[in-house]
Length: 182
Image 1 (tube, helix red, strand yellow):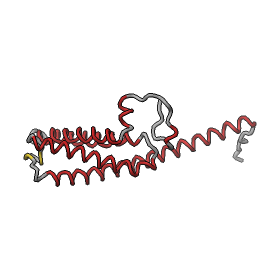
Image 2: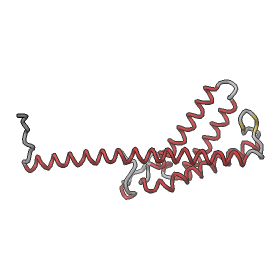
Image 3: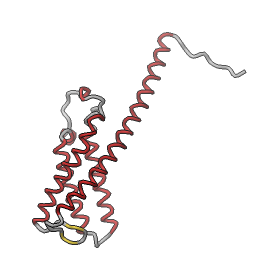
Image 4: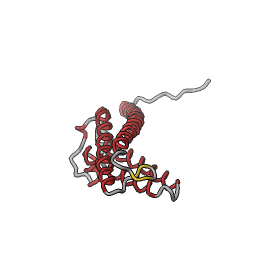
């Protein structure tokens, strides 16, 4: 199984990754796919807003899950120190893909702004708001993910040190003397 969240890019082994994993190496492709999917989910959710608020809420929950999932799938291929530029670049490219999709939807009269149809006049404000939200969500998620990865690495490293120390003591014949409580 390939190693996720490598410390250095030299830790990659030469093996042909599966199709999605191969896609996840490309910042541009991951962001573009994410942007198109999120805009279409948004249009679908707002198109059915009058039927159920649960549907809209569920659609936005799915959208957030897709956003952070795709960002994670991409970031997992690179060391944490590269995340500082990859995460914001992902947000910008994802927003660009959403903006292009939104422009196409406005052209065919399917883009929504709330329950009404969006127009070209609405487009710049929609793109700006989308970019702001994407930057905030991805930045917060990246910080949380980096903290989790760092914590797990420290726990694993401490466990390895203890295991190596125990193995070293066994091979040299050194054992902790039992303590007595007198």
